[in-house]
Length: 302
Length: 302
Image (cartoon, rainbow over all chains, first blue to last red; front, side, top):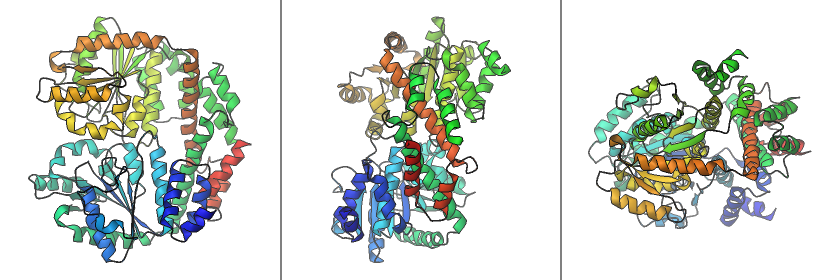
């Protein structure tokens, strides 16, 4: 495949086209992802999550400066529909990304959050695989921190930053069940605003048990970014030392995830459904859906 | 099974125990749901979604009064962790539910939103099946209106109410991609507060194309509830006239959903995984996850 050869030669257009193919679940998806798979596993994946308006994009912009200064590269995946990174107009005026855009060390991609059902999680995962194989040192994943799907996505990150603002205090309760539990570091951005110290106190209590650090930043002025950068580098060092058991587990789970999505695709289209006859019995009220599922699972288990 | 016999005799304790068994994915789950399935399909399912603090619970409380006055019964499923219906203390002081609790026409159940991954959606679905088969006329499903999982859940509703407050104006943008798109009616609760008219205008614009009505309520004073009740009754009438094609499609999709969850369970436990050998090849780096998935799908397709 010509496109994959170009991809391996660091052709960014080929990268973009491959992400699109994979995102649209083109029939060649599995083939593409399979061919690039042995190049993956080198990027450090940073998840950045938090409510709209918390300044995630500005923070990413500031982080990029450090990444570039260190001679490293970064791919950004924006799964936040309200992010300036998302949508057609990749970069808003608000952020000073123009310096980086032309730079071949930075690549920005938004993933659609519309009409997906578990599919978002898989699309994002696939996009990350491609960026990883392309050779980016860092992959930055930007999401809005609410809902289960978000939590599913952020699980792909090696380190997850939850970005809040002093006004977020009230919504912590709602977030608690979700993203709060998988964050590795809490960031209070726009920390010059009133309320930052009481939020800091609450966050330190919440993060106490799991030893989650709380960092105060003012991304728009670059405050606190150096500390964040140092933190991420430390995490990156730890991340390298993965044990073979963990890798095995990871490969098992990755296979299970991919297989479940493919299985769902297979049965959702009646024409391809290998259990079509059993499904028809359900349609004709000869079996109920649970009997049918049981019957099929039994068949598979033999 | 003794428990199922008791369930059919309208034993509420049996109902509760069956919901728990099914929620914990007890091995008997499929068997239970299969046995009760032909009693389902009669309840009218109302989805009530909206941010915490929008007054969903108060609204539900007011709706219950109408339901009981009409001699009907209701099962409430609370999937909103911040709801007074949720958690151990089923009912808070804030709401005047005490009148109804002892009433055998009302049943309240909260479903856990912790640590699930797609599983919440399935647990909620199963709980609804049980309440439906038990004979409740209405099932009220209360969720926080954010995230994909929420959207997945609310799809089970026959009619979905999005409850907002005048202050919600700002968050509409974020919600847009999700719950906004599947709401059947917009409700502005606490409509005595400033901002309700401008929110009404925005909502009417958003709902214009799909003909979504906008209703103003003050649930705490019972204002607007009569109108809501009338609206729901009209919807209920429409709902009765379902065509056989739609039912077939629904049964197909229901089977697919159940099968996918069961398939995932089957492969996630290595001991039961019928494709264990292929998974081991992945663990031992002889295949990559995509090759393995392809291989298994090909096997299934034969």
